[in-house]
Length: 83
Ligand SMILES: Cc1cc2nc3c(=O)[nH]c(=O)nc-3n(C[C@H](O)[C@H](O)[C@H](O)COP(=O)(O)OP(=O)(O)OC[C@H]3O[C@@H](n4cnc5c(N)ncnc54)[C@H](O)[C@@H]3O)c2cc1C
Image (cartoon, rainbow, N blue to C red; front, side):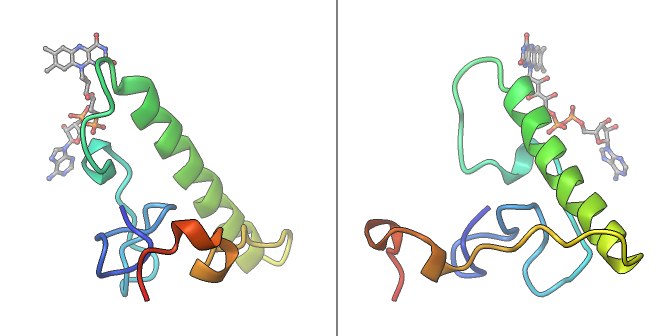
């Protein structure tokens, strides 16, 4: 998972960069070990990704706004490591 395709395969919602609609929702998207007992973290990520998928589906159906994708400009300056 990364902020763009130079940093990772998927974005913070599990969507594969440059493959709209293709999501990965499992432990493989985590950047590294999160400590012992990762299942809840993986489940929380999957839940977040599912929220995004549902919002996209509802938006496509015209019933709700899509969850806004964050961009680098939304991040604090200190967190923007890439040019
Ligand atoms: C022995 C052991 C004990 C553990 N104990 C704990 C614990 O106590 N607490 C804890 O928090 N974590 C524990 N973990 C870790 C935790 O189980 C894993 O980190 C977590 O299950 C990973 O979730 P996942 O969704 O990434 O992968 P998985 O749970 O492995 O799910 C992957 C799924 O994808 C399916 N799949 C694979 N290939 C394909 C394919 N080509 N097409 C379709 N489906 C496919 C598999 O059948 C599987 O259902 C333990 C792990 C092990 C091995």
